[in-house]
Image (cartoon, rainbow, N blue to C red; front, side):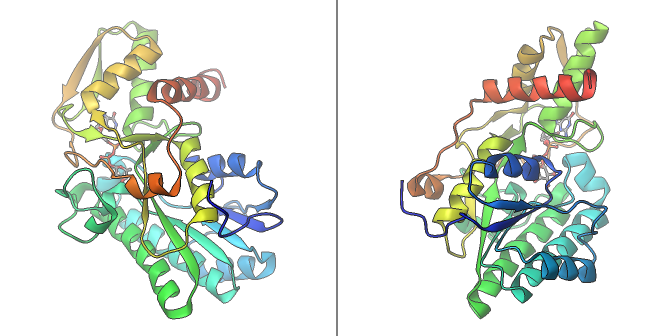
Length: 316
Ligand code: GFB
């Protein structure tokens, strides 16, 4: 393992967005580090409120920040709430990054999203593809906000020498996911649909789109581990891809979810719903060369996610 560039030991570390899927995984992961984790819920401040964010950061004085707060959702939420996805995310990231600068935060990590790369980028997508072509329309609003966040970190690094870095996760799933069918991503949606279909003894379950698009999926606790690793070992301006390096079709993931849940009926593809990007596999060579690779298999990750769903949504 390479020597740490930055130590989290004895640091005050703010996880912005600690109630979300990524933020809560980060809080779990940081229990293994000798640091003090700071959190602030929505009752304490609205991250879109500049004065509130500056006041809180000024009084709590974190040493390091993981910026995991965002308005997020799946393909349908992205295309039906463009104003929220653009405005909320621009405000959240601008407020936190600027407050970090004003309060001399030592290190900050921002999180991008694989939709920042052009719709038709060569696969697997390298970090250099950023801004190389038009975006996928269903999630361009979210993508523009995330690209702005990455560039804001780069700008503060260039003008003020701030140690702000960006990680670039692929599609995520896992413990603490959102299972609401209107706003969720594909894996939690398929888990909820397969569970309902099994319970009701249905002959089939609905799957949006053609089933042909391909997606790469990373378990959220693996992402949290990668983020802590990068916080310690990376300091530069390029956003670093985080994924497994492997993808599969929506049809394949639907079949795998059905096996995990135990639903044996048919898949009914609803082509009135959008496919979105045909493919967005990340090239993870840079992170691999730094010494980090994903550990959790899709089978194991799906099992843990379904167990969490059963405990928290079905029996909770
Ligand atoms: O996960 P998902 O909503 O987001 O959809 P994206 C992935 C694929 O799964 C699409 C299909 O081709 C969907 O049509 N799909 C099939 C379903 N059945 C379902 C279902 O029941 N629910 C959902 N949600 N999808 C998002 C972006 O894109 O990915 C965000 O909109 C962000 O901005 C995120 O980048 C990581 O992968 O298409």
